Length: 151
Image (cartoon, rainbow, N blue to C red; front, side, top):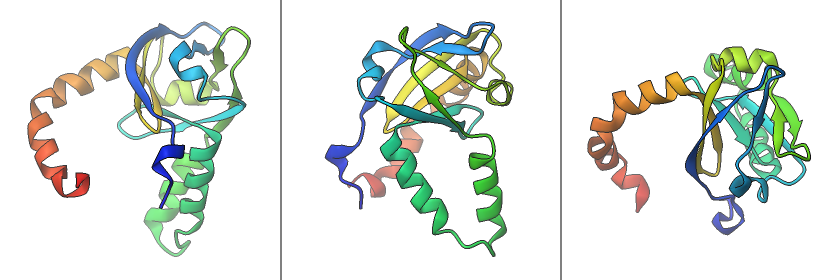
C-alpha cells in the first residue's frame, strides 16, 4: 500500500487557456509538488492526467503487473502509454502538451485544470462543464455507493 503522507494532494479548479503552441500554465499552487519532470497522459472521461514522478512510477508498477493475456490490460496500457509524454514546467510555469493529447482531450482554447487528490486533470472547458452538469445531481448517490471504500 502506498504511503498516503507521501502522496501529492492537489485540490481546486482553475480556468486557463492553451496557447497556439499547446502550452498551458500550471497553477502556482500545484507547481511546488511538481518538481522535475511530470507525465501527461490520457485520462478517463475525456480529460488528461498529470502525474508526478512518484505517481507515474506507481502506475507503471501497477500496469506491469497486469497480464498480457488479458485483452482489457492490453487496451488499457495502450491507451495510457502510447500517447503519454514526459513534460517539464518552464520558467513561466507552463507545460507543452503534445498535439495528439490536445486533440484527444478536445482542448481548443479554454481549459480547466482540476486537482483531484493525487492527480491533476486537464479538461476542455466544454467537456468539464458538460461532465459537471451531467453528474452534479448524482453526487449523493455516488457518495453513498462509495461508502464502503471510504472507511
